[in-house]
Structure formats: structure tokens, C-alpha cells
Image (cartoon, rainbow, N blue to C red; front, side, top):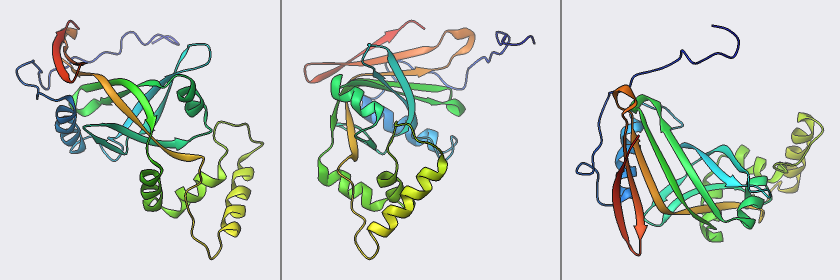
Length: 214
């Protein structure tokens, strides 16, 4: 294979199929069904997804985040509120999440508006994190330029000294966002690239399903 030429890499799918008749009435229920199925085979980061936002020039920008909670009202993740993604969401509070579960040959795309979760919810989640992660939230000036890794080590030590003998509470600049879905698409890999795609679109207070061509 010549350098850069990867066109010969391909896989024919065929583990399962998906139809309008087989999906549940609510996309969050369907997501839960697939998520639990993926947990059996996908490994420890089955909750990893690509979060896509819009930058100041309207360019889409994606990065991997970890989903921490999902329910009827939306999909929750956590980050530094001064990070690049947070600044983008402040200006354009719209985003999408893309999940890909290779072992099940499945993809889910979730689109909608994004809001900060209430402070008490962020507090509760922060208190459950390992101490190292809680220290890291204080120490890292996320998305800002830093001189080297030692800078982070020094910041962690500063935070440890600051909170020595005290409660390590959540910094105000760190917390959760919830993506409130208005569209959810389920993709099931199928032979010869004739994949199954079922999309849920919220019309008023009702979810409407359609089948899309691959």
C-alpha cells in the first residue's frame, strides 16, 4: 500500500438489521437498549462520543468526550466552563454527539440545544469523582497554552496545599452540560453499504420516525 492510500481498507457489515417496526417509540429508550447491548462487548469507554460544536467562524469542531448520564430530558457531559468547547457553546448553544460501537456495527447521532445543568447536579457528580480528577479540574486551565507538563504537576501541588484539611469542593468554572435532543439517528451497518438508518425527529412534543437511504 502506497503512503496515504487507504482506499483498500474495507469491511462488509452484517451483524444485525434495523427497521421502523423494530425500533422503540422513544429514541432515548432505543438508545438505552443499544447502549446496554454495547456495554457487553465494547469495553470500558462505551460512553465515549464525538461532541461537535461551532467555532467563532462557524467551522464545526469535534472532540471525544464521555457521556455521564442520559434520560428523557437529555444527554449530560462535564467539562471546564472556560474551555474552548464551552466558549463555543456559550456563543452557539447547539451541538451534536456521535457514538460509534464498532463491535455492534452501530452508530447513533444526537442533535439538539445545549444548556448548563443545575449547580447542585454538577456538585453531586464532582463529589463522586476520584480525588485525582477533582484536583485536575482545579489545576488545568483547559484549552490554554502552557509551557510544559511540569506546569500541571506544580498546579496540582498548589491545589493540594490550598485544600489541605479542607473540603475539595467543585470549582465554579467546571460543571455539566446537557444536550436536549431534537433529532436522533440510529445507524446499523448492513452488507454492500446498504445500511439501515432510522431517524427520530421531534415535532412539537411527539417523536416522528423516518427511514433514510444509506
